[in-house]
Amino acid sequence: IFHSCIFISINRIHLYKIRKPTQSMIDFASVLLNACQELDCSVKGMKKLEKPENIEARCVEINRLENVADEINNRAAVELFELDDVKEIIKIKQIYDFFESATDHCEDAANVISDIVIKSR
Image (spheres, rainbow, N blue to C red):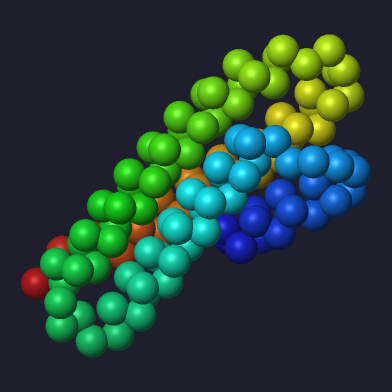
């Protein structure tokens, strides 16, 4: 699911002809990349469940990254309404929403992984 949100965000940037990504878009992408990498390592770690504490630590990090994304989203919303072009505001806001949704999905997946690890002990 989060892969589709990433794809949709990037596709919308292209379709909406956003010539230069905002700093918030760059920040969102960085946080999302880190969350996806942590999620990938968590899933790989579940195959053997040899070090559940490492998986738990990654899940905690994913939750922290989602909180960072929330902060980016709040800052971005304030900056967004400094723009004068209503069409541009709508386009950029939609892109932010897709990034935010993707980080939420990463957090949801991390919560499920964490529950599985806890129940497996």
